[in-house]
Length: 377
Image (cartoon, rainbow, N blue to C red):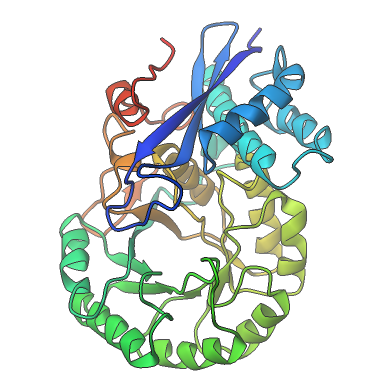
């Protein structure tokens, strides 16, 4: 009973971020849902930050391993998928696809047991989690309106990143940060993402040190991706000497790749992405190991409403987590939920206690974003 019968890839299309460049086509297609269908008729969704063609190819490769496998043993089933694909795309789109499968299996386990995922992970340490509004930077003079709109939605923490930051000069960088701090006031948290994993990032360690000194003047909560994503030696030095907490890790996959970053204390805040890293199973293990080394985990969440739901449960069950990333405005979040999460008067989201994710998905919204793909009834 409760065996995997079928797994479908559901592509999501659109200009997910109205000011984000579509680099591969007129319509961005970098988010893909995976739907796991069981022999008992239960279904569940996972989320993958990878184009649907790559996800479908991975599902074709993995089919002999997952067809007929248990749908309610997420850690065991997905570890079998990982262990048998060391030679075919380890760490790339195959691992990303397994991430989505793992997420869906945790939801199925919750549906079958009647328990929320956070309890299945070990128990809820917090009942609500603070989302931070994640948005791209604009030229000086244009950030205020974006931040005010997010504040009006209830956000009390804000991350600004990429765009012109680090691409012109230090005066422009500081003007953007100054305007942002003045807009949200002293009582809200402000984070800055340099976007060092963007193509052809031009800066190194000394730029990051100087920029961190500037950010400290504006009480920035963390400085994200100031260096290229593979510069672990630079991150170690920057974390040791930088004047603000340093965050990175969104491009790493599987727990093994995180070990040196944790053991060598390369960052203050570690940022695994549940839609890439191997799913809830891997991210929870990474988080526990980071906790043993007194490193905070901040889930990277540039994905969908399904990913946000997973992040809420992971954060609720972690002693070393406080925030979740919430893109705004973001149809891949807002249109995927039947009823989107409510931000309370203090800027927090209540963690659901219903079975599995505890959220209901919007089949019409998903059909619209996927250009006509219907969820299995």
